[in-house]
Length: 82
Image 1: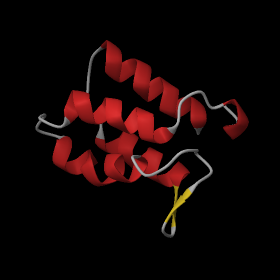
Image 2 (image 1 turned 120 degrees about the vertical axis):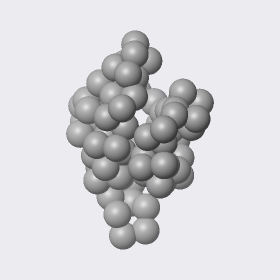
Image 3 (image 1 turned 45 degrees about the horizontal axis):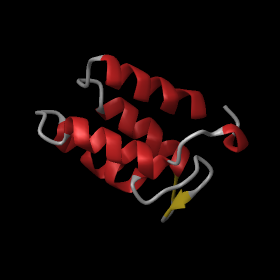
């Protein structure tokens, strides 16, 4: 999905991920990336020297233990942005 077709800002997606995962056992691995996403708006943004694109990729890699309908929907939404 091109950045101009992005539906939700990354910070809104990060809030949803946090609400669903912050008490799960794998959360410590995903936390830094989800927190960084919380400061971003678009997939083309930068977080310090890191691109939002890479932050989203790392978040997806560390959210591998997140399962269920919400997880599938959110992960698909993030993958579509890449």
